[in-house]
Image (cartoon, one colour):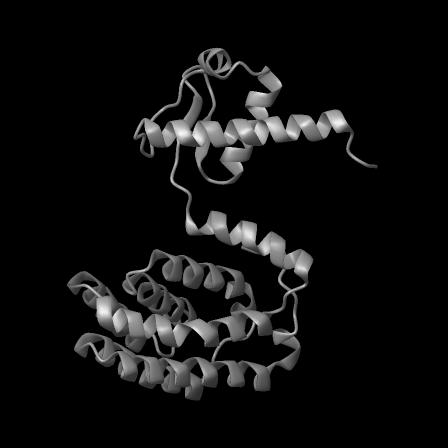
Length: 246
C-alpha cells in the first residue's frame, strides 16, 4: 500500500518541526535534563497540529535527542544521543544493505591502525591511565568470561583517545554491532595471548607517542584477529547484520 500524498506531507512537516525543535534546543543552550515547554506552549509557538507535534517528538525520542516523561509533571526532556542510538540506526541501514560480519571486520582493518596512530599523537594523561587500567583488567581476566568485553573496551578507549569523536563513535558502534557475533564464538587461549601481546605493543607506542609503531602493531592485531575469526568460523563471518540485535 503506497503512502498517500497527505501522509507524506504530514511526515515532512513533522521532520521539519523536529529540526526546528533541535535548533531551538541549541539556541537556548539547553543541556541534558532540561525540560522543554509543555505541549500547549509548543503548539502555540510552532503553530502546528497536535498530531504533527507528537510525531516530531516521537522522532526525536527515537534518535535519543529527548525522552518523554510520563505523568502529571511529565513532558519532553532534553537528552544526549548516545553511541547506542547511532549504532541502532546504523544497524537498520546495514540490515537492508545485507551487510555481514566480514564487512565490519574489513572496516575495522581499514581504520583501526590509523585510529591507534592518532591516539599516539593526541592521547591525554587521562586517556593513557584509562587504557593502562583496562589492559591490567584484561591481563587479570585472560582466562575469564569478561575477556572479549574488556578487549572491546580497550579498543573503544583507544578510539576516543584519538582526539576525533568520529573515530570514537564509529569504533564503539562497530563493537555494539559485532557483540552478539563474538559472544557466540570467543577467542581461544592461544589467541587471547596473541591479542594481549599486540595490545601491550599498541599501548607502549601510544604512551611514547610513536604513531608509526602504534599503526603497525594495530594493523597486525586486527588483521590477525580477522583471519582467526574467518578460519575458525567462516559461517559466522558470513552472517548478516540484523536490526534489533544491539
